[in-house]
Length: 157
Image (cartoon, rainbow, N blue to C red; front, top):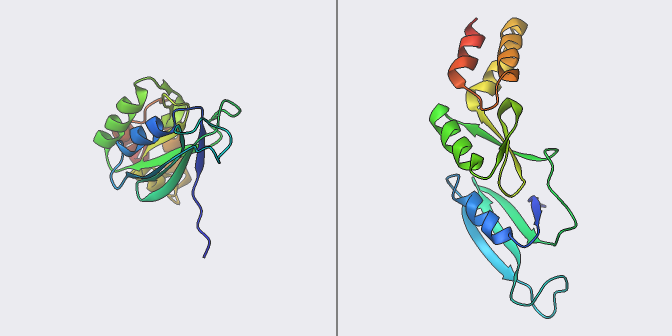
């Protein structure tokens, strides 16, 4: 069976970014660091070409491909957080050099966008009661970093 892994394109800091990412979430690690060689065009021999890493149990690649492409919020890491403490820890870490956006989105210091969301949010917005869903969504739309207690209060009405 074929396997799939996202490949993130960096301009010289792929290893630094991958090491940062694996420090954020459990079940994460650097699996391999592959250098450019005289046989691999596009980089200086000895510089890092590709980093294979595991993030929260899923495989990823980080490529030092040069300045040709930039990240946008059109693709983001969606992190389901168990509680407000996890939301706060991730948010505050990503905020160092990052840029907060509305509705729980934040762009990290490497330009990668993240959605830091409580696990309970998914359950709340799947509720069959449209009034509950509307209240939760309206509350979320007023937030930058998501506040689980406020979302739960909106859900309960």
